[in-house]
Length: 179
Ligand SMILES: Cc1cc2nc3c(=O)[nH]c(=O)nc-3n(C[C@H](O)[C@H](O)[C@H](O)COP(=O)(O)O)c2cc1C
Image 1 (tube, rainbow, N blue to C red):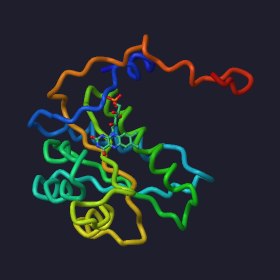
Image 2 (cartoon, rainbow, N blue to C red):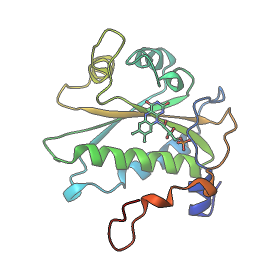
Image 3 (tube, rainbow, N blue to C red):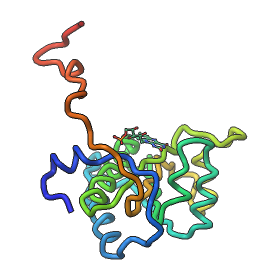
Image 4 (tube, rainbow, N blue to C red):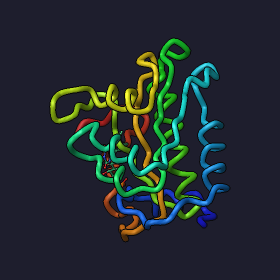
């Protein structure tokens, strides 16, 4: 378990391979508490989350796009992050912040996670990934899906972030500085 927030940020890497064991129910609860405490525009709480553990459903979801989806078939838990645009015009931001909270809380619990982008992606036949996910899970088409966060005990080693390679040239002090 990480104690220092900066260390947590340095050590968090996308993890796409997970051990074949379920996540402790209390940890799942803590992760969802974090998601439900994420800030939203005008406190709209526009998000909705679908937790998926069934391997057959995870396999089905993995067909929503041809690349960047492999972690779905290897994880014990996936959290589908959607939001209601009628409640919040910046629903994408609401969903994205919640997804990030989920990833950081998972890391703090010693779990690995990976963002699987759904919005704007398509399967091999050109069907929107969002439609495939909504249909598989019985979600209304009025509830757009931003992403799926896969979570599990880490089964791959990733190096921490390299502080020497941070792109400080992208930080402008006082006014924009052209190179
Ligand atoms: C908006 C967004 C979309 C992403 N989509 C995917 C994805 O579809 N599949 C995937 O495996 N990783 C995805 N990632 C993870 C990135 O590939 C990863 O964060 C990036 O390569 C940096 O690596 P790191 O997370 O280990 O620092 C996504 C991340 C973000 C923030």
